[in-house]
Length: 321
Ligand SMILES: [Zn+2]
Image 1 (tube, rainbow, N blue to C red):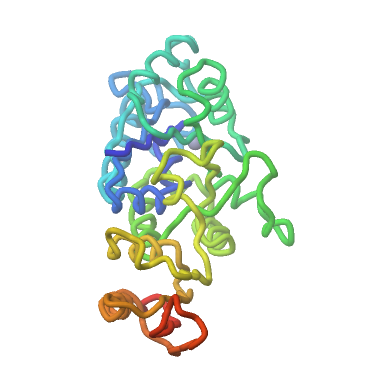
Image 2: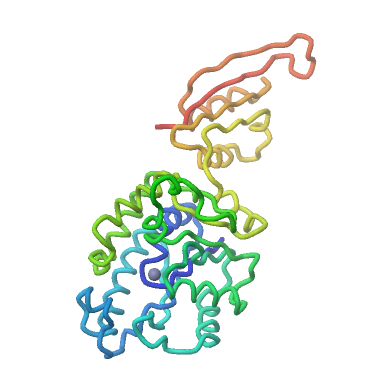
């Protein structure tokens, strides 16, 4: 089974930033772990820091326990497994030196195919520290390391005209695949982090979803070289038109091929197909009509072309609504 690990500084970053994509991957059978490094020491009796106090907690331990429970609910909604390291955020003593934390993180990650770490805007000191730790300490192979745009920070920074631009040129950002069901799951998962809502400001949720709507989803930078096999195509952006020109009869499993086309097609997208007429053309047409909404078709015969004496079926279908 393919495995992806999302490294989260605090108990909510991965879900706020990539919740829909995580849900999307999980639905496709990818095993997803959300590894939170600064999940806090649940046994600590230390007085709560300023942020945790404002969230209503009296001790570090109480905050860590309650926030882990929230994270567990959110991960359950998305089909991900939570993994928590008991190090502390910037309100407290970290709990160990960087090499110790890096070694622990390495064990917690296991051997995933891809690891996603915070990548932009890295405004929060804990986030910048964690990404540096992953990059500098060889916790994971750089060829397997990708990045994600962090929320709600990126949405809060986006204003006016520059909000439509990519956050920055490097790494190569792209839209993470998501469907309406994934966006709904993200909203449910985000709601689980109840203790944090009062601290995120009045309009953070509206800004976050407006930001993602403008970009047709969340933003990731897949590992250089396109990632790992199937995952590279899963992470790819969606398209308004897909043209399948004389290819559909070449797949061993047509149903799988059509599912993949459906996955990369936008909700208002069209599939244009051309297939020469042969013994299995009827089967092909029926399979297309089962998976997509039929729009129009023409049949063309070119008597001068001996390669396809029965001509071609050229059809247009829409993504099923
Ligand atoms: Zn954070």
